[in-house]
Length: 420
Image (cartoon, rainbow, N blue to C red; front, side, top):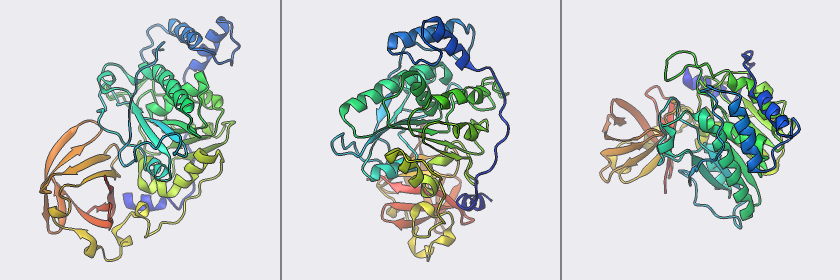
């Protein structure tokens, strides 16, 4: 069923969305504070001191609001060159730069600082000559507070960093992020008028999932991901890409229609059929279907529809079934020696399960790095299948640096790209 849905994702039109639940709109509070401080209702503060006054005013008017603590200072985001992306070329050589901010773990968990993944369509953008920088909240700070408590501080940090990249002389600067990072980027654009040429907003959320990972019951802050969103869209003044995925526990629904109200040129990819989960837009097959449309807006500011092409048996990103591989048996990886000493990044269909795989010199053990930690596990080959733990799959070499991992049913499990 999952494979069928994946194939349909590139063939079917967008689906309609459910009605949006309503909740108090914090934008009215922000407008009131601006007026009290002598600004007009829609006037953005011109300096950091005034922005701090607006935030402090809002905090004073929301005592005890655990889901929305307004910070008056920025935070220090950790930055890295993502997995699978070349080292920065610099302003003189790169076509532009993307500053992409990662999400925030649910509850009070942490996302380890060593994990530096980005959506596959940003890897393709880097392959075309762009610099890509990934940033995240420091691991040591993530576990102490909820993401909503520091999202305003994150927005201030994004604004400062994007301004610095602009000052370095990059020809084009794109600001964006996933989940918490996407929401913080929108806040930075609304409050600070980001020095960016375009925005890339992937599954934006700072209020947590529909069901609280802490209590196991409904998340009372969840409705804010819808009620606060129109004001953020209205403030966008540069070309913007929005992506929303079905089956996403952080998605309230209805926000695609809201995003389409943006006055700036925009591309909205709204719950494309077949893609399910918070990280579904990170997959290589999503890049195959929608990456060109996204990159066109980021590079030129040109909006337009995103009509995915038919699946291709010759494109690594487009392989969803072993039946698309001519003579897969001759390309099968069937011994540990073929993997020994190699490292791969795997984009998997299982949500939240992207990982870096590093095989030891014998190929009999591998280290698995995920968003939450690093483990080691034995690897063996049985009847031509690659077995790690209790899971056995089939590995097929598609190209020298590309491996496809298939389920026993023949459906795609993951796309592996070798790190070089």
